[in-house]
Amino acid sequence: MVIREKILVIEDEKSISRLICSVLRKQEYEVIQAWSGKEAIMLLSSACPDLVILDLGLPDIDGMEILRELRSWSGMPVIVVSARAHEQDKVDALDAGADDYLTKPFGAGELLARVRTAIRHTRTASGNSEVARQGTYTVGDLVIDYDKHQVLVNGENAKLTLSEFRIVALLGKHAGKVLTYDYIMRELWGPGAGKNNQILRVNMANIRRKIEINPAEPKHIFTEVGVGYRMAENE
Ligand code: CA
Image (cartoon, rainbow, N blue to C red; front, side, top):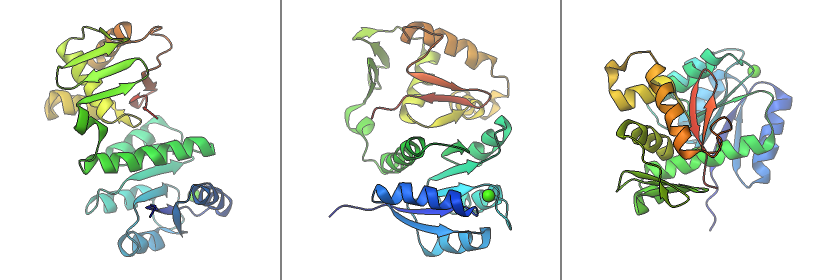
């Protein structure tokens, strides 16, 4: 039997909700809808969805508040959708525990790619991942070898420094997902890492020189301007 993931769509705008739901149903996902924050909070605990699509601008409760409340008791994946295009809003949502962020308007293909990524990461977290099994992550001509602490490009060792390797390794473990600058800094250099992202930018420039054919047009690690970095995903 095919496992159908259950997705809760929290969105008060009828036309957008309808669109999201029809895109998801076409892909055989089971979809339930909430039209307000109150309804959302009720369904989050009673319907046990596998994934949540959360609009930030709801009529009764702010979406950020719902996200924080949910994160106090559950790690279920959340993709935030919002008309708020400011970088700080994305950073805030990701730092509050959102798995991803889509700015309206977005395309069906983009939505489905993010949904697949978030669901795959849930499976990864339960120990069923390609990475865990093989100790490598491959995307295109790039291979991250977690056992040997090496990154290969077209079979050649890219000769990353330890810091550079740790950045690439972290992004590879969360491929497809945007990691904020602060998150990367904390993961790599501890909670005292501070807010100066200069060290990260310098490292990324060096990484790109070593792993990208054209560092100005990266194919492996993308910059989400003002937010963070995202590793390309192995489809
Ligand atoms: Ca709304």
